[in-house]
Length: 241
Length: 310
Image (cartoon, rainbow over all chains, first blue to last red; front, side, top):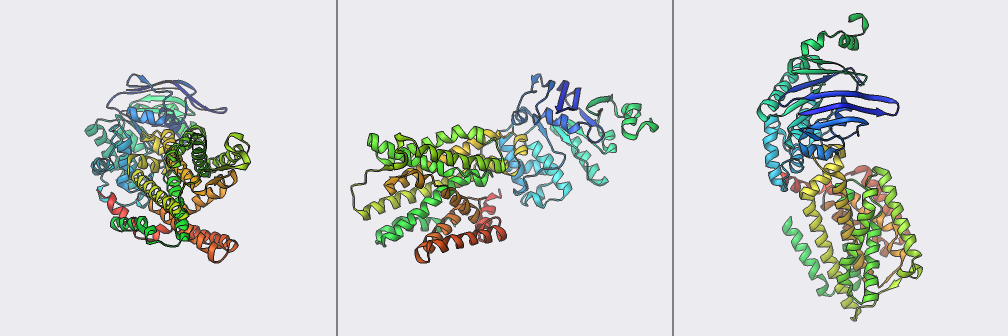
């Protein structure tokens, strides 16, 4: 469904993502892991059009999107969340989602209808009781849900999640994992996620890619990847490999 | 609330017919003018968060367009004020795309430069009267009728602009602009074509400012680059919007009314020098203690919030 070949992104002399190949099939939950600064978020920014790629090709459902702008990519059905959540702080929780409904793929023009649809989405992520409070009053776990709700509001077919589990308690992670399964199973949305919380990745993803210094180290089922010596070396150092 | 507003508007329209001293009509004319300018500025400055100092340019272009069409083609200024708006909008479209790529202080500085450069161009452009300025042919009526007509026209214009801006605020366009103000990157990820929306708001604001400028020019009957392109007008607009609170349509309205009245009254009864000092102090106090403007301390926001609930 989403496929990248030879994707490269440079910042001056630093090659943040180097000749990276990836593919995510429809209905999969795929994880992208790697140490800090390995290029995970950079790759997401290239996919969503925030950084222009310096090389390679990205194809979504048979259509090349390498040179598309972020809003065009959103309109094609790729939604994303940000690593550090970015709610529209001075707006209500409901309006945060409603604006995304209006400008997303449903392309509504009435704010009232947008809010009605937004309310359904808030129910789906379990935030409907907070609909009228301002986004800056939410606690961290709620902000993460809002971030998800806003991404879902554009009616995507593909969802890029940037460290959705970080900063959550074990309980909250369990709930978030359930929510992610529901997003895939009930809404039929394919998921590509970056994660640091190993437990969460191993339990959730069908396929994992490991990126290190912008290069793909390994790819495969979670249990294969976790046994891969070069992956262990990248995370824990040479002695443990 | 809406009933109260209606009563106030009807009263204002009827006000000249109780034959008040002309001073009041002159005073209120300038209040209405600043309401129109501040509301139109707010599309960009308030909702979108792009603080422009170039608004006076669009105002002045409106005034000049109107004067030129009257003097060269003899078309009534009240009709060509609209054309003034169109010309202002065209200039906004031309400068909008490049200038709106800049953010924060860089955007503000480049709009300041726009205002300064346009003033210099008009100062040296023979066709528009350069530094001698332009005269309007006067309306063939008495002073009283003249003031009455301009009062009513500017009041109608200010009302219309305020209502339209209010409508935009609650529309899809307004929602998109507010999303851009809150976080432009997030706005893009939810499918908002940010550059296009910003240009739309910029053009719309310029259009309204141009019409206001057209009527103002005819009212003054003489325009000169030093008066029409005066950067102080831009600053006043900005102060009024921030004073009132620029996140809602009601804030700039309130700010424009209070500050232009206060300014005029202080100038008339105390003195122009004191007025600047008081004005500045007032602004400092508001920015420090009421960063969201005085509107926050009035009941209006709660009413707005109620309307937001589906």
